[in-house]
Amino acid sequence: MIYVCIPSHNEAATVGLLLWKIRQVFAGFPREYQLLVLDDGSTDATGEVLEPYSRVLPLTVVRHAERRGYASSVQALFRAALELTDRPKRDAAILMHADFTHNPQVIPDLIRRIESGADLVVAEGKLEGEPSWQHRMLRRFAPHLLRGAIAVPGVHDVVSGFAILRLVALRNAMRSHGEAFLVTEGWAANAELYWRTGRYARRVESVPSLERHDLRQRPSRLQPADEAMNLWRARSSLRATPIAPPSESVARDAERPAEAVSS
Image 1: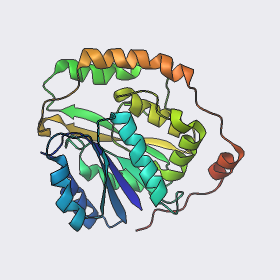
Image 2: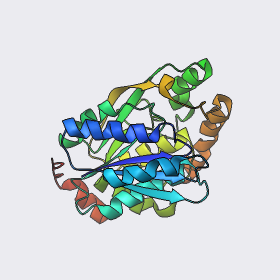
Image 3: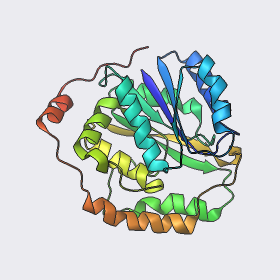
Image 4: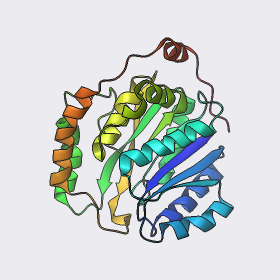
């Protein structure tokens, strides 16, 4: 089973179309899949848009009455996937955004990498249609702001919000850190996710992906100066919560061969 996890806040203009595009991808690339969307305290029509899709798609909607932020939304989605799975060594979760910048056509490539034995695959984004040069420069140099606090071998674009994670690796990382799994916010939370989960992954890979920022139907919420400061400050939080050593049960999981993702 592939759990497609989509955090959203005020994405009424694009979230429905994204779900339909994902459905089309799986129609041509048949795998068992489940859509998990978290509506993080939206004040627009996101909830109303999602409601009819839940009747025609394999869709579960999780709602926060008040906005809790990106990191909290991502953790809630992953916990939902882990509660649903009965085969975490086979199943995987895809993280992608609801604003239509992430291309659903990359999903088959991500899944194939998991099927070939990877436990974590990050879609490294090449930005297209992003009018802000500050945004483009920050995305390019963001990994340098986290240098010394985070390293994910094989991944350069550690702040990408588009990736697939084998659930056994994600489960082991979340169990080892408990409530302190993600202690940062924004782009830093993506880097933290890959850093912590990568510790429990046998193989980490990356694939290229085109991010179409010109398809976003709302102004970017990112303020480059604020996000740069957030990344810099995240270093202290990450150093204060280092990766926990694996337990004996986690070590045994890592030694066992992974099951193939079912089609």
